[in-house]
Image (cartoon, rainbow, N blue to C red; front, top):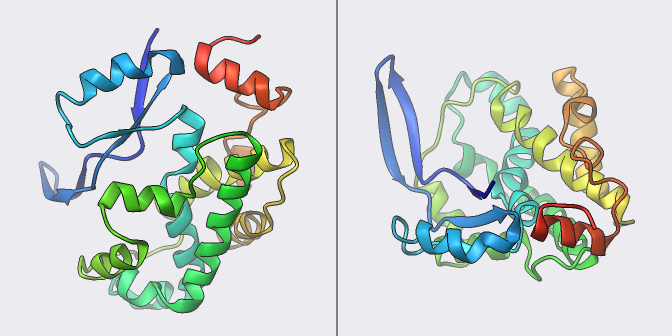
Length: 232
């Protein structure tokens, strides 16, 4: 079976009623990965018939960890938690949430992704670097543009921005880090604090290398599996 996946949805949308959706914009260029990875060129050629400006990732794990949602949502939401809880949906996620202090934490998290990628021979780019390819501008320009979107409406901290991005993204990052001896203190701290805030066990629910059946693989064995779809 040949499977392919994109890093994010092609359009930013919001449900406006029981039978209607408002489409705001394209979400930028779409990154594609396949499993097994050996079929990437074939599937990418087909995908480009629909999205000509798309680009490729080396494998599905690389693509999963380049999803900027895991870089942005847990950090901004955590550092803006009190504001979100009292704002009654009137919190502007990027305008109020993206401050210099927040960016410092985002940078630290991004560096952990880059260190992990180097350890497992993934793409030599950080998640922020990939985001610049996706939008065709610098990170600073991207963040400035995001502030013009006026994204509001976050009313609770028990939202999919956390309940998806923490267990499926940050837990995967930390799990891979532990397996390949790459420290992830920022990611560990974010997971721990979100578990306290939402009274949940994201490690138990999360996407770990063990759950994926990849926890006993070396770097070389992992690369072979992601490319061939079978163990050595």
